[in-house]
Image (cartoon, rainbow, N blue to C red; front, side, top):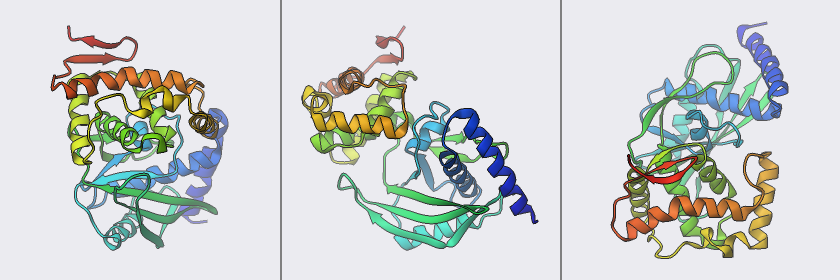
Length: 306
């Protein structure tokens, strides 16, 4: 038995134990293990400074939430690249040598395609296959281009499931993550089915403090970059028209069930009203061209600086 096979068996057993202890599905933990180890390879490659981590894995990288599951790695890059260039990036990262972790990423399975989902926003999706022994791990990376990150991206140490090396990655700020989700809410209007965005903002506002001026700047720059006009009235996504819609209530219920999330209200109305109280004051200040000299405290909401 070679070292890779031996390590794959060991990791498989430890992930099974962790799944039993945590109550999370084994396949979910296997997926996370595959994603974190690909990120490790990328962080030790020549591409480490070119890509910024965003999306659901951003929340895990900050240590804030391990609750909402995801199967994708979301990245941003300052300038666009062709599908062929990004396929080559993935192939190269698949072959980066790291401390033995039992994983094999197959560069021959790498395939890319253009994505344009929900809105007119270009990106590239890269898919390939990872293996831990006989267990297959379908890998997917979604890459966007030209996003504004405000404040500047941060270097973070990504948390790992088991012992071993941790990826050191450039990461989105939470302010920019929230700004992009709010822009999507405004842009998509009633067509918005991205319930994960509502959950993410609700979770962050109840578990994190924010400088009002920093969040305001991130929202302003994101709307400018994505050529979206700030609404003068609360957007549909933050109104009764949205949270009273039977289709939206069904989407929220389905999201909570599929993600096995219990730390957020069942009632979509409560979630929307909370988010409105968090984001709409910033929108109003931007419309009035006033600076948001307030601090958001997760337990007390917006308050003046001391």
